[in-house]
Amino acid sequence: LPGQVVAIFQTSTHSRAGVGCDGCHGGDSSQSDKIKAHAGHFVAKPDANATLEMCGACHTQPLDFFRRSKHLAARPNARRLDCAECHGVHAIGAASESFRWPQFCTGCHGLEYLPQLPRPFQEMLGLADDLREGIHALESKGRATPELVARRKEIRHMISELVHGTDLKGGAERIPRILELGAGLKQQFASWAER
Image (cartoon, rainbow, N blue to C red):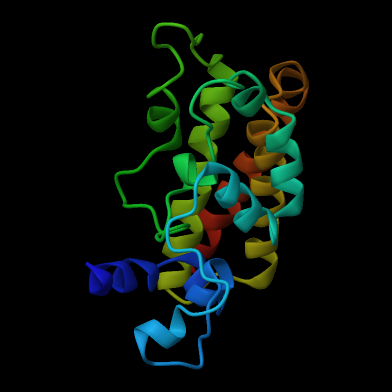
């Protein structure tokens, strides 16, 4: 199992950014012996609160939005949601090709007590998937420019604000612009892919 965790982690955004196991779990990365590496402040399997703190150490703004969101506030006495519920644990940023945000979110939204997500929200989540796939296709061909990567990141940040904050009212006002920007970026992706 530890070998599988390492293999999964190596595909992640954290791994590509140079964040090692100790970046989240603590411990001593200079040690090759497991017992020595896990000495000191090491957290193997954090609970929901520790996960929020762990992720929030670097991702402060998403955590701030999430703490004020309905995702967290609506469940004060229930099992707490944390970052890993939606983003996974070790493969963050390396979703399978079949993964789609709209289908994932309907795992809760539209069932029993939670209303279905409005169509514009579903379209925005689909856009996040389309942009992820588009930039990965360009990267595989060596055609992803820093400008295209930055524009995708900007749009992803706009989506993140709405999703982490569960902002339906603000979202209804802001989603049309996000979809417009995304459509323009998808056209640029297509143009670069044809070169």
